[in-house]
Structures are given as C-alpha cells and as structure tokens.
Image 1 (cartoon, helix red, strand yellow):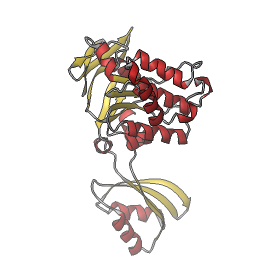
Image 2 (cartoon, helix red, strand yellow; image 1 turned 180 degrees about the horizontal axis):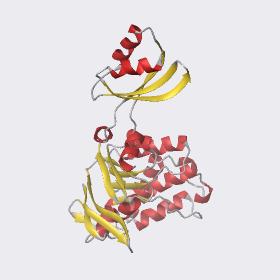
Image 3 (cartoon, helix red, strand yellow; image 1 turned 30 degrees about the horizontal axis):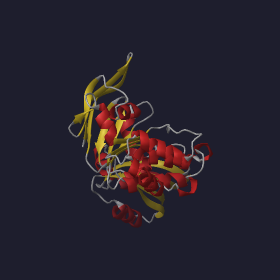
Image 4 (spheres, one colour; image 1 turned 90 degrees about the horizontal axis):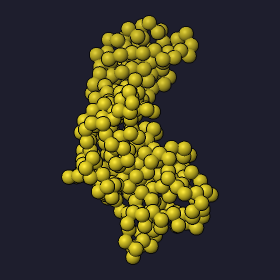
Length: 309
C-alpha cells in the first residue's frame, strides 16, 4: 500500500503542495486528477523518489521515501509525462539497455523483453529506431520500459497525452490489462478515461486535495445529480408554474427557446426522485406537447468542474 501523509513541497516562495494525504490500496488503479499546475506531477516525482518533500512523507509498505528512496524505486515503474527515450536506439536495444540498468538478471533479460513486447503490442516495431515511431508506439515503448523489471507499482503521468482517440483506447486497454496484478497511479486530463479505467479517484487543486473516493462517491459528495431535459410546446408562464408545483422537482432552468410557444427546460430532481412521470402527467392534463425528453447523466467532467472551480 502507498500512504501519502501531510505531504508538502515548496520551491522558493511557491507552495506547490500543501499537506496532502491519501492512500493507494494494493492492486488498485487510482486516478490522480487536477488542473494544470495543481501539483500532480510534483506528487508523482516525490512518490518515485526523484524529488524530496519539504514536509510530510510517503510510505510504500514499510519503506519511506526519505530514508529508503532507492529501495522504493526498485518497486516502482515510472512513465513520466515526457517519455525518456533514446531516439537513435532501436526498440529492442533500448529495452535491453533498460533491463540491464534495472538489474534484471542476465539469464532473464530475453524472456522479459519478449514478455513486454507481447504485453505492449510492440511486435511490429521491435527492430525500428525509436525516432521512427508514432506517438502511440512511443507511449507503448515507455510503458514497456516501466514494467520490464516487473515492479509492484506503476506511476503513469499523462500516458495518453497527444494521442488520437484510437491510440487512447489502446493505451487504456493496455493499462487495464497491466493493472490486473499491479498497483497503479494514473494521471490524466481525459476525464472519461477515469470512469473507464480507475477504481478510485483523487482530485487535487492548488496543491490541496479537493476530493477523493470512487467516481460514484465523488459525484454524490460534489452534490451532482441527474438532470432531466424536456422541451414542451405550450404557454411558457403557465408551464413553469405547473412544473413548480411538482414536489419532486428541486430546480427548473430555462435552456433554449425554439418558438414563442416552444421552450426547453433543464430540471433537477430532488435526491432519489424520478420526475419523468410527474412531468408527463402535467403535460397530458394541460393538453401541451412534449417535443423532446431525455436524461443527462452526471459525468466526471461535471464533478471535476464542481470541485476545482
């Protein structure tokens, strides 16, 4: 388990991290989110032992990052935001080099290279120079170097940055596959990736924890609820008055106007209420017409904006 306790980092007069605390359980994929400059990369650099904290500490099992930095690095595979690749080397040569400096036993290096080539889908490019690879394949090579020494923990800083939608799906599936038997901290700006990939989420803003929990827990704690959108043909003033009489409705917001007698409304139900039947009943009793009716599910984007605004 990774335990981050009261972690702070100050550079000059700039306080990048301000006493943040969270835990990552064994075998968990944790999404680590925040706006640019929030402190995500700084936290990852401290966990991996590249930077030392100003205050607080990080424990990986019984080891702490201040006193046992080298021992912790042996347990971690790290993919920074800018992948550390040597462009002039071929993929196989590079992975062999990484295996050697990661102290993979000589008699196991070939097997480990074969394994990560298969896991990361590098069969087609193994003999190519890294400088000839696409962004997607470079990210795959970066993941391969991060897991070649069979670490217990993976730290992935923005692994899908700059990728096209197809490449993003490929890297997402790869992370999920690798995460079956590893603990992963996964930083990303693509919030849909969080719901598709991560077990829990930590959101950081201005160097402090803004929220943490499962995606569903965050949605509830942020006060985010389902929104019902309805477009009704009828007299606007009367429609709003009748909708306000429905106890299950918390708030009514006018969204658009198609004609003098056609208006769209976003309706926020009270917690646990299903307002669709009530709205439909009011429309039928008053001989109005429903032209559009749908539910808008709360997304991680909504939660992120709520917690970091």
